[in-house]
Length: 166
Image (cartoon, rainbow, N blue to C red; front, top):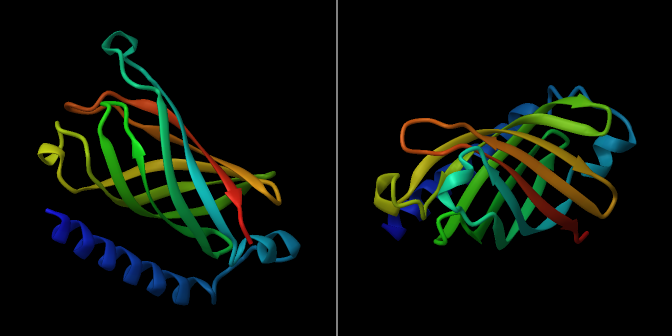
């Protein structure tokens, strides 16, 4: 199962490199803000979730650790691990593509692979996509995501906190 995860991770990272090469020629964001984000490295320290179904007693304090690298002004790669809402360890790898800027907030979606949710692939690796917004100052940031409710997944909103290290 871990071999499958690492294979999917390698595919995701290679794809992000291709996106980086392709998007460098179409980057429409200019100026200091674009230059400031590209090449930045962040440490993600987990965060909080709030589930739409309040009756199931989910864990909503999701401690974790991860790293995020902004390879483009509107895209980053994220890898890490956190203690999920079902009280299981989750490992993830994703590309966060945010082509829309509204004031200081970037909006888009994260697409990646993760594991640790027993109702999906028996806790094994699966693909995931979710809407994502990000606010970043020079040294701190917040990723805000929405997990939609569908099939055997109860939806939630999530906050992930991060600190810039370069």
